[in-house]
Length: 153
Image (cartoon, rainbow, N blue to C red; front, side):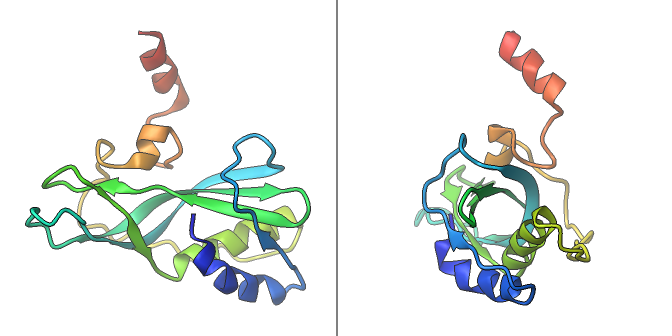
């Protein structure tokens, strides 16, 4: 959760006279709307013994939720380091605020242009390292039938 970026989201919402507060609880039950999507940013491995310098990602999974009382939040999923398997937290770019504001505006009936999506990737999405995939909230995760089959077995 990146409450520190709330001002950036608010600045984009105020353009359409929308005023929302950041909902601090990571509540998976009381939301009105929810959307799994992705943003861009850069990961740095925090393991001092790891030789990895970090990596950029154009596929950082997030779950945006709208709550009663003009409130929202966005869960940002981490990724694991390819070198040491340590969990890395991302540094996010402007795509976070753009994507969150886009969905809040959509849910409030405001016509908006979809934020740009970069198709430039230096490699395939690694589902084993993506915490969003592991949680079933990444746009690149296995389909729900495969997930259900995995739970049954």
